[in-house]
Image (cartoon, rainbow, N blue to C red; front, side, top):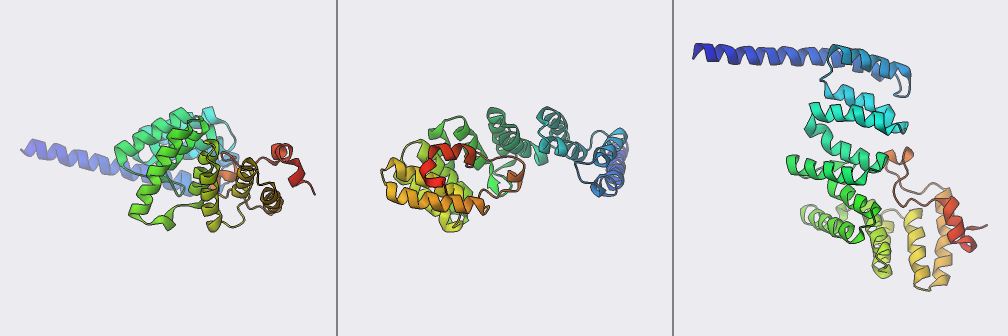
Length: 270
């Protein structure tokens, strides 16, 4: 018994020492090193590389090493680093990797796998104010599996309403449900969801644009023209998708005005 107790104490002591050493590395090379630079500057990576030479098993170092690669669209390098972060801290970074694959890398099949596994292992979770289920639905939307996308997002709406109430459903979630219904060619239902999104974000140009397309499909040219003229003004004022990472990556179905001017030329000129 004394031998077992001694071994346990030794393990606890060793673990505590290792954790203290890692905290010291993080303090020196991240908090007082890399974080003093913007992540696009060389000092950021230089400090992280020095830290990794001290201990290459610290997940947050790999996560921060990957950060500029995601933003600079060097996705292969970003993923190589982020895989290490997941290896050393799976709970913190598995679901996040799925999000990054969805929004940045556009690897939708792999993104779905990561987020489904994260939810299976660690429970219902969020990234950037939206659930894993939201992003999984978005992945299916991007694969043109509209029925599956609708099914998943509908179930997520039902969970949100049950747990927190309908007012907790984000305007972007409503927007994408409108997009799904538009792709399913249920224009009345699409307009219903775009209107719900617009009640939360009144000048949301992308929601108005797709609502306008629905009106055109319904042969309501008068209201479509009126709305499309509003859309162009709102877009020029910057009322578009406002997610944090939308400054780095274009979110699905964000209106590309270079292309939109050819789809509705009579409504966006002047």
